[in-house]
Length: 351
Image 1 (cartoon, rainbow, N blue to C red):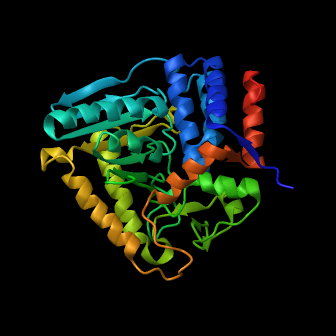
Image 2: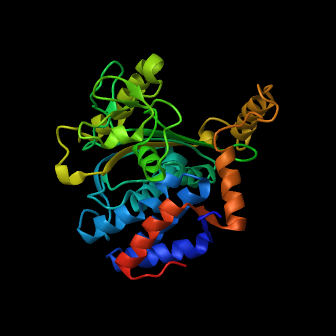
């Protein structure tokens, strides 16, 4: 018999809001935090859904995350701004930033924001449709200046954070949604493998001896392993280049890099995001037609395995969301135990 739990997205969102408010978040902050965490679960980003609620509650309780306030605009020009989130939750700040970028794109064709010191933003994928539903393209990169867990190619010590990269693209049908780490895997997936007692599906860790490993236990050893850059043992130089790209565009452009980050910043992120309005370059609907042609070409490619048709990024996540909206969100026993901790911590019984 499975220990899996299923609950509606609405019930879990409302419960999470109550928990976050109980720890000091204002209603609007709590609503944004809860809805975007649940959105991660709906899309299948399990490590960045309500599994992150415990971290957020503890950070609010000890003041590491601010429960109210607005980001400060440090610098601005017509189509670009630098914000300091001052440890407000990224789950609250990023939707505000995307809304501002969309407004700039309507006026100037594009809008760019760099945001520093936003407490952990969770899954970038959950923000992309805010732009695609407005008919715009979006790209995002994220880094963590106080974190070093990813090794450059050829090294066995770390100097990068996992650095997710994401794009959202409107088409004539479903949007294309890509959210990927520039390391071989995310630290959250290693922790999930630890909690579930299983091995990683590929050697994504580098031990202190310099060996590539699938064993998540090495990640919590006395001398821990580090994450490999995307591409792994053979092609990790490509991942190293992409990690540098990410950190130049985030830490460099925010003027708040690894030498500046305070220890108390913890998991606080720096985010670079850019929105493009295609109608600045062509008539309305023309880009969506071109984008749909590209999607159709990908899906028409002959699959290696006829039972596994070729998919475009986001297709599986959107299908997962549709199913879970009908049937309820599935939570593993390991995740549910974390939610039980949150319920007891906040005296808010689970649905």
